[in-house]
Amino acid sequence: MLHIGICDDNQKDISRVQELAVRFSEQHPEMPVQIQAYSSPYDLLDDIEKTGGFDLYLLDVVMPHMTGVTLARRIRERKERAEILFLTVSKEYAVEAFSVKASGYLIKPVNQSAFEDAVLDCIHRLSPENNPSLLLKSKDGIHRISICELMCVESFNHNQVCTLSDGSMLEASATLSELMEELKNFSVFVRPHRAYIVNMDFIRRLTARELLLTDGKRIPISQSRYGEIKNSYFTYMLHV
Image: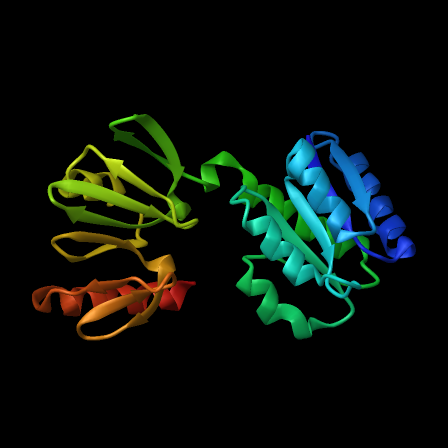
């Protein structure tokens, strides 16, 4: 079951998207759809707090009192795994859509083909095989974290501290080398210094001496590893 939350202050646009979702479900009976519509961002946020979130959000960009981009940021603050599609009359919001990790946007009036392609892409992104995880053993138990949420690992006083994308931290029992061995199959991870592992998805800037991460953290680069890190990062940038 795919749970979809729609938020749009225009009832005609809501009805149109609901109609497209029903057709999608009829054409893909293996993927039943459940839809909940809201005309107010605040009502959507209230329901999320009370009953939990949705798999897919379809958000109008321009709404009174709160924009769709701001609403998306509020949803992302919950750190739940969900896909977001913006509904808009213009492509001018594409950059802002990227800033909240949206899957894309649909131009109004939305047509069936564009809707189906976008939803199928979101379903693909939500599938477990596209969201690998890592089991981390710590003093208080075993934690399963998504690979895409692991920002960096720092070795400090013989402890490995993992920083996650929401700013939380976990202390892992494994050594840094053992963690790097587990992460070696994921090309986004590099080891710029003997005391650090970094997820390149979170690098804001690379210099000859350090990496600046999206949360402001500065990670030193060993002189002997700079060439390798630079090549890895440039290769990564060519494929994102």
